[in-house]
Amino acid sequence: MASGDDLATVFSSDESTVLSQDDVEMAVSGINMLLNNGFDEAQALFCKYKDDSPLMNAGYSFVHFMQALMSFEEEKLAEALKILQTTEKTCETGDGFIRAFKKRFSKKKQQVGSELSVEDRIQRQVIVADCLLYQAVLVFTNQDIASYIKGGWYLRRAWKLYEKLHSEVIQLQEKKTCEKINQLSLNLSKPDSNDSVPNQTQKPSKESTSKLPQEPAMDNNDNELTQEVISRLLGSVNFGYGTFQLCMSMVPPKILKLIEFLGFEADRDAGIAALVYCSHSSDMKAPLAVLGLLWYHTVLRPFFALDGANRFSVGISDAEDIIQQKEESFPSSSLFLFFRGRIHRLKKENDASLVIYHKALDESCGQREIELMCLYEIAWCNLLKLNWDKCLEAFTRLNKESKWSKAYYSYLVAVCLGSMGEVEKAHEMLKQVPSLVKRKNNQIEAFVNRRAEKFKKVTPTQEHCRLLALELLFLWHALPTCTAEELQPMLKVCDMQTDHKLLHLKCLVEGGIFKELGEEEMAVNCLKETLARHQGMKDDYHVPAFAMFELASIYMKSPETTAEAKRLLHEVKENFHDFDFENRLNVRVNNALKHLKSNSKQTSKQSVKQ
Image: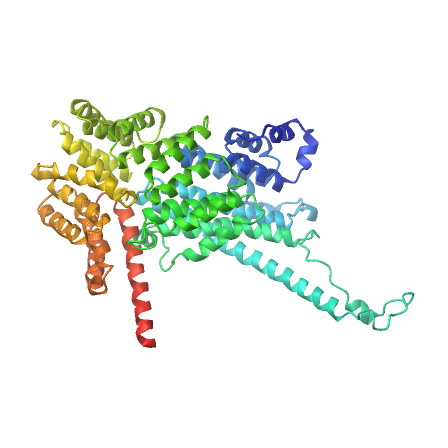
C-alpha cells in the first residue's frame, strides 16, 4: 500500500498549504500511489482536489478509466465514460458555436487577465484529447462494428488535437533551443580576461545593449515557459500521441474505412518513441507510459501478431528492460508483478508465471480489479497445463465476483466441469449460458452462446469438453506460450475424439499444436484436413478462416511458398465474413501481409545491390 507518511502529509496539512502545492507534483504523487498498490488512497487524493486543478481532475477520471479497463464490467465502463465526458467538458478551452455567439454579443467584456496562460491552455487541451482517447479505448472493449465506428469517431477527434498540440509544443521546444544557441554564441563572443577590460563606470552603448541576451520566451500573459515546462508538456502530449498510434495497430483495416480513416496508417515506431519519451519525462503520465509500453510488449504484440505471424516472443527483451529500469520505483507493485508474470508466460515459463501471479494477487489485496486480473491469468496458466480442478476453482471465483460477462465465465466453468468428467453439471451450466448473454454483438459472448446452444438437449462428453478447452487456447493465441511437455498431453486429448462432427475442430487444434512443436509437415496436413472436413458444413466458419491463417503463417517462412501464403491471407481477408472473432483475425492477417510486403521490398533491394 502507499506510504502512511505520504498520506499524512497530504491529508493532515493545512488546506491552503496543500492547495498552494504544485499540482504537477501532487498529480505525480497520486499516480505513484496508484501504481504502488495505493489504489484507494490515490482515488481519495484525486477526488479531494479534482475541483481545484485540471490535472487533479484528469487524475480522478483516469483512476475510474483504469478501474473500468481492468474489470470490463458494464457499470464501471458506463461510470468511467460519464466521468471522462465531465472532465472533457471541464477542460475545454475552445469556443463552441453557442459560447462564441454569447461571447460576441455579450455587453460584458472579458478581462485580459482571465485568459489562460499558454501552459494552462495546452495542458487543458491535452486532457481533453486524453479523455477522448480513453473513451475510445473503453468503447472498443465491446469489439463489435458499432463500437469500432463510435470509438473511431473519438479517436479522430483526439488525433486532430494531438497532432496540433504535438506540432505546437515541438515549435516551442525548437524556439527555446534557438534561444539557448543564441545565448551560447553571445557568451563565446565575449572577450576573455587577456583582452582589454572596458571602463566599468562607462554606460553601455546602444550597440552593446542590442547584443545582450534576449528575455526568455513568454506566453500571452507574460508567464515564462521554461525548458522544464516545455519538456513536461511534450511528455504529456506524447503519452496520448503514442497511445493513439498503438490503438490504431489494433483496429481492423475494414473498420478504418468505415470510420473514414482511409489512407491513414499508424506509425508504430513513432508511437513507441513517443511513449518512451513520456516515460522519462516529469509529467504525471510518465508511469502510465511505462505501463502502456509493458502492455504493448507483453499483450498486444503477441496477441495481434503485430510483428508478423511467427514472431510471438519478440517483445520479451524490451519488456524486461523496462521492468529492470523501474524496479526501484515500483518494487512491490502488483501491476508490475502482473507484467512480470506475462513475461514468464511469453518465455514458456508457466510455473514461474504462476508463482508471480500468486504474489501479485497477495500484493493487490483489497484492490478488486487487480485481484480479478491476476486470478484470470492464474486460471489460464492452469488451463495451459490442463490442471482442470485448479482452473475450475479460479473460473468459479471469477464467475461469482466479476460482473463482466457471466455468460463467458459460466461457459469456462462448464468446460472445466465437463473436462473433469462431471458432464451433468457441465450440461446444466451450459444450458444457462444463453440466458446470461447481455450483448449478442460482443464477439466473446456471441461465440460462447453459439457453442452453448448446441447443448440444449444433448449432454456433452468429457472428450468434447476437453476439445472445447483446447479450442479456447487456440483462439486466444495461447499455444505459443506452451512448452513441448505441455503440448504433448493436448495431442492425447485430440486423439480421444471420435465424434465425426468434431473432426474439423480436432484437426484445427492439432495443426496449431504441431506447428508449435516444429513439426510443420504434420501441421500442414492437419490444417488441410481441417479445410476438407469443414466443406459442406453450415456453422463454425471461423475454423477454415483460422486454418488458412495458420497455413499461411507456415508458408511465410520459406521464399518458395510465400506466394501461396499471400494467396491464403487474401482469401481470408476477402472471402470470409461474419465468423467468430473476425476482427481479431483480420488484424493478424493485415499485419502478416504488411510483413510479407516489407520482406519483399528488402529482398528486391538486396537483388539490386548484387
